[in-house]
Image (cartoon, one colour):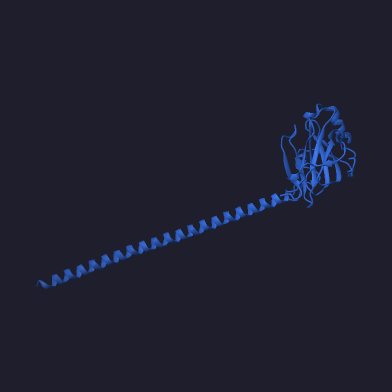
Length: 248
């Protein structure tokens, strides 16, 4: 009568072993699944990192290419400069304009403006061409006096050294329009900007900062620079120092 219980015990032990094996298998499956999820997540993370890195590299390359194109575009324009010949007085305000490039400037313009508290009118005088390797002395007061409204502003506001603002506009050999502005007593900023083309809100006939401030331009007919200089030019044109043959 003792044999049946022993067989029952064996059966129970067999069932227990099967349960243990089943539990272990289940836990192993869970771990395998978890590992799979981790590997999948890691792969996705790696893929995302690689995609982000590639995008960053592409953006950097695009930025460098744009910077390089900008540097090339400005090669000639950087050789065009303007500065005061001497401190301005109420009787005289001369500026020096220099084109140190071996290429001429077309649609070359000099503008003279005032602080907005003085006048919203400003004058522009234009020359068809400024030759290469050329330096000029320009009389700003003569330009201001050549238009009735700017002449009136000039007469009622002194000292001029505190009210005059000026700059250049021109097209380079590739036809790109630029504005060159020195540091003045009115606008303490020096810049070289695209006048149109790259930034479409800029007009090819007037600088953005003057237009946004509500200034009103007064422009004369285009002129030809003569060997003796001509109107608004003080003395004869002369060769610019350090003329650069191949801008780099």
